[in-house]
Length: 86
Image 1: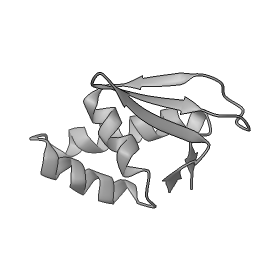
Image 2: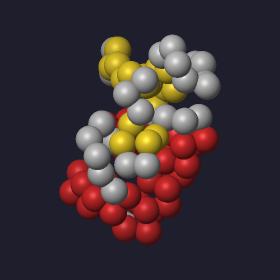
Image 3: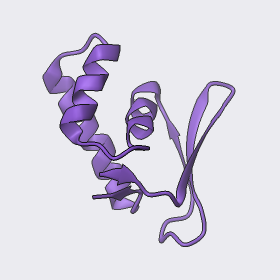
Image 4: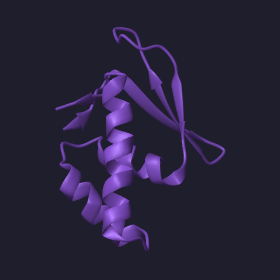
């Protein structure tokens, strides 16, 4: 799975923003907390949920079950707006 290239990311003053461009069915922007931003950045290359979990566990001191549920929730939200290509 991968972030749809029609969704662009930008960091401004420490805030991670994902913006839809023309050609998407969703118009708007997403302001992400650090964990969601990390997940979105992982999605810039073709990856799997499992690979993102492993990367998240390397970066943050968190239980695997918490990381897995956070990743599932963020990806589900992104899928709901068409931002993730499987």
